[in-house]
Image (tube, rainbow, N blue to C red; front, top):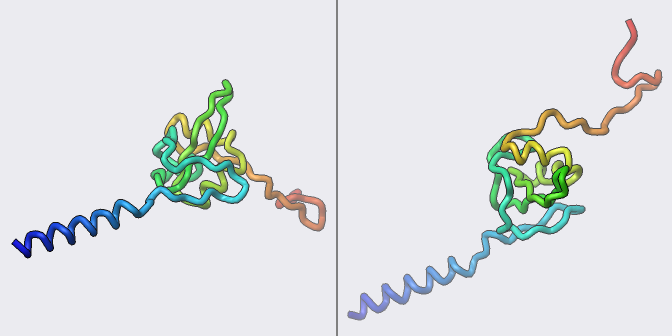
Length: 121
């Protein structure tokens, strides 16, 4: 009888330790709007890279063209930052459940001769 009581007590204590752990505690990327981690994203495929959405990464709040508020899920903190930088570019892909077409980033630099990465031949 003593063995049964000890086993039940040990099992109860180990289960309570797991219940106290919060898997959904997520820190949003700097500059993004905080969203509850248990909020449901509209997509299962990361709109930034095409990988599966990670439920532990807080989704990014966005607005569709018709003004509807949606949450875009991402696969990583890097993709979360990319989507948070310009969520309007990823909304349609998130709704469609696919990777966004090539998203232009403003990283073009001009060479010393005034041409941005091209030459005239």
